[in-house]
Length: 224
Image (tube, rainbow, N blue to C red; front, side, top):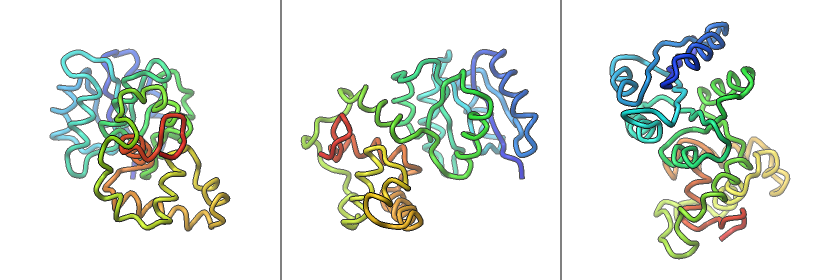
């Protein structure tokens, strides 16, 4: 079954370029397009979509607020934020709004296609180290460590799950976490899955955001 993709961007030329790249893939289909957030939300009411490629700077309703509204719905499609500049503050806001990651608009086609497939399979597409760098850049927007109550569900994590969560938030991959804790990579993946379930998070990106917001991890990547 093809991955159903929606393109949301106010620049028609960019949408055309993305559509041409995606149309050449046997496992992808562009099923909808929109030029702004208001139009995107309207289209999604009547169109089944798996992945949304979301611009951020658009008229009427920007991509961040559009992402927030999309992700608030049950069974929502995954959202991949597209930015013009690395470490754009919009990317940060998009991640907090529920996006599964962000990419630059000038990303090579192969990387874009890989990202869409990853998002569709349930993975985040932002490398943890890149996510951490993004959050470090905008850490003043987050609560100071120790001054805000922790997410109430964090208390439900086992000691091992909390340990894994901290390492995810510090930018380690499953393989690196496995080596650090002397576990199999499959076991680490299981722990990550349980963390996502208990905290009701969509993916690793939201694990990182939550760890910073609750003070579990300080700017710079250290444990709080």
